[in-house]
Image 1: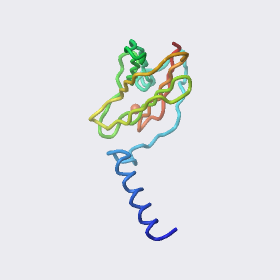
Image 2: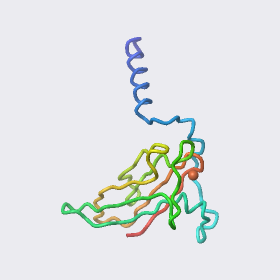
Image 3: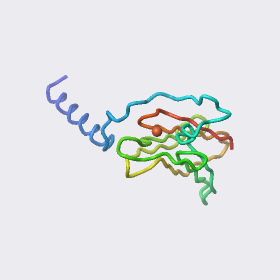
Image 4: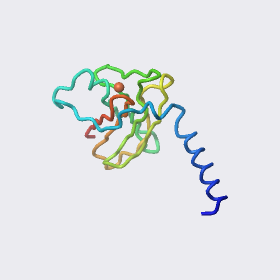
Length: 141
Ligand SMILES: [Fe+2]
């Protein structure tokens, strides 16, 4: 690799890091996929991390409103400087259709997307808490 190419690559990598997020990546201390201890009876701690997926109505082009709010049973996950949901992913039949990158304190765990749900049978969302890991929930539609 030419020296000039190496410098360009380093500059691009620095830019990519700058735009990846505003928060310190060192705050992401748990990136593990978490399992519910008893899926039939989640704890309040687990409810706090579980995505709540709701399906709204379709627009005139056939795209349906899908909302994902983090926290079930009215237990909303916090968003403070050292503890927040930093990413939400939404999948339709296993295919990623939307994601949200979120900032501590300024945005809480929420995503909305307009999705073509023709022939889609399952929606799945993954909630990523910087301290407590990744929690998954799905609904049949
Ligand atoms: Fe958490």
